[in-house]
Length: 149
Image 1 (spheres, rainbow, N blue to C red):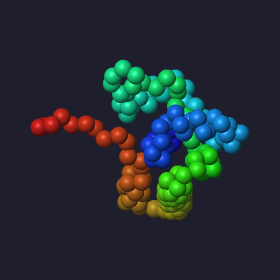
Image 2 (image 1 turned 90 degrees about the vertical axis):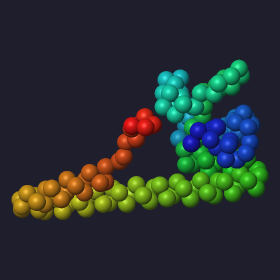
Image 3 (image 1 turned 60 degrees about the vertical axis):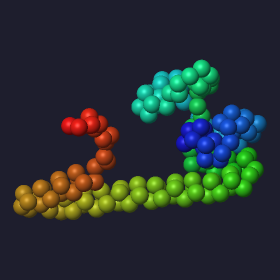
């Protein structure tokens, strides 16, 4: 998660969140937190249109990104009730996403096993397996339609 998104959730300014992280740098190794490169940040800005208009609205420093472990560690450096409650909800969301990903991998594995078992049979099975794989495929970005078309 981006530092600015976390700061928003914790209801603190981004620079204050990063200030606490810098004061406790030993708690945030590279697998807990890293800083985006200039190219990654530009890509992120263009993809999600996060550029704010106006003087003084642009970030002076590249954003930090926190992994699941980094978010958990934030609760030890941000000492407020709000930080603890937000952290609990974020951890629940990470667990839910992990469970969904594992479930999808298991389903894909079982589907592959069934496909191998029935590959010598009727072509109708191939059509069914192809349809199931299409349903399981990740959804790409939605195409924007012009209004009135």
